[in-house]
Amino acid sequence: MNPITKQKLTLRTAFIAGIFSCIVCIIMLLNYWQLRQSDPLESKLMENLVQQLENDRQNEALKEEIRNLDLMARKAYFTKQWQIRAGGYLLVGSMVVLVFALRIYYSTSSRIAEPDPSDIPLKTELLISRRWILSLIILLFGMALIAAFLSDDHLARSYELVGREPSIEENAVEEITVRTRLEPDPSADIKMDASREVLTDNITDETGTTPTEDEKVREEISESIPGGGTNRTSAPSAEEITRNYPSFRGPFGLGISRHTNIPVDWDGPSGKNIVWKVEVPMQGYNSPVIWDDHLYFTGADQNIQVVYCYNRHSGQQIWQHPVSDIQRPSGNLPKPTDDTGFAAPTVATDGRYIAAIFASGDVVCLNREGSRQWGKNLGIPDNHYGHSSSLILWRDLLLIQYDDNSAGKVMALDIKTGNEKWSTVRKSKISWASPVLVQIGDQFELILSSSPQVAAYNPVTGKEIWAVECLSGEVGPSPAFSDGIVYATNEYATLIAIEPGSPPEILWESNEYLPEVSSPVAADGLLFIGTSYGVIVCYDAGNGDILWEHECDQGIYASPIIVEGKVYVLDMDGKMHIFKKDAVKTLLGEPELGEATVSTPAFADGNLYLRGLENIYCIGSK
Image (cartoon, rainbow, N blue to C red; front, side, top):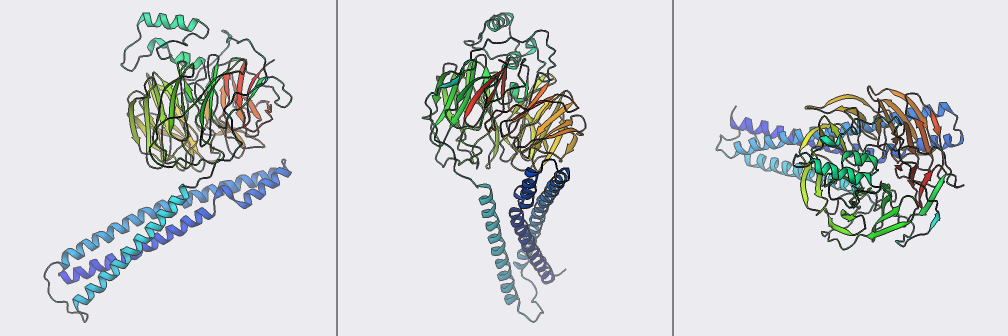
């Protein structure tokens, strides 16, 4: 092939690739615009059907129509997402061809060649071609800028926090009844999740050494004293952690509690079985946590961040600690939506320290007396809701999932000093899910959910152990774990069961019912989820078959908790739906708080604790 023919061929190839790139880019922009205009979450038809259902709750045909419409909306959403991804690959491919063709064209045109026998002089043809190429490049560049601008605008949508004026002053206790702490019945048949079956004799510290006999004796003496371990210096054992409720969704973040004598009947408006009720000092959507006799939670707005400690028996405030004077890098703080706020993450405690994190990226560690050990800012999160992932404490390490738009990251800080022990950059996008800690074989793994992957890390070193790319969207629910299997999910994505390993294996997937915020919980071959559209579902954890479902009048943001052979699921109206943990639906009760809530309950022997939008409640059997 002579140089002139080669020039013409490559120029025509570049021209065709450029035109194709323009067409793909335009189709992608139109597809993106259509996706934004037809948000499946804001379907007018769906709103009308739901409104009709409000007036006719027994209409089974209408319920089936809503289910079918929801399924169609999901399929359409997934198809649009696939088209955008496919278009992206085509655009990249055509641009590669364009660049490659132009590279060959200019490399051949720089050589001395025979005159072009065509009617148009070569110099004129080259000038025209270059103008076409330059015009195409400018057009593509402009479209890319437009697409980037639209994407940034879509992700950066934020709204000012709307809420009542908070106060950090101590509030009076409306009703106080001091109850004697109930010890668990030794004869109670409590079947522990596989992640809980840990012998303290087999636990080693970060250096890999086994505790000495003297250390074990000191630990046993400390544990035998009520409130013992208060002044201890060593980290608590796994067994101690399971005896408390130290983090979001309880021990290790798994949604399973070992506590007993939990009530199934109460009524907030009348005061039935309400031990005490205390007004919440400041707004916050985090959940309460418990260690021994202390109950902890946080509140915040754009100006003030506070950690609170209460006596869990009486409801009396013990201390409050305003979190201030933490140096931050330059940059604007996030502007959370009114259903997220500045205090969405739940605190974590190990009996010695209390760690809290806020939407601003400020993290603080306090001792049991409420004095600050240290405080620092992790960097202003590039997150249109603000940071929302909760914390876990394990063996003197504060484990933090810190995913935002710029990069995913998981890290461990020394709980005593705040110094970074390790930090691992992750292949992930923005996420509000919280980490969970599980035992697989003879080692512990830190499991994280995000888009696009569910991944496991060594909690001591931060090294990635395994990962599966299976999720999409802005992930809110945390993973579940039972019998060696990890369960992860997100609305408009999937519900997936993963067997960890090298490589990990996907056991099954389902997309019929998917939670938006509420995290799943699994135990004894059963998996429970609660959806934002008010359906509670029980799955066969082994194969993904639906065993039963239950429809509520309100959506669910709080996560289901399994305790004492029962499943507690709290809807946004404050109604608790209590089921027997069984493959056959048995509804044990639906007591009402009389106050809206989105927080997950906490448990201690004989009591459960609910945080409403206005008050915190202790509920027991009077």
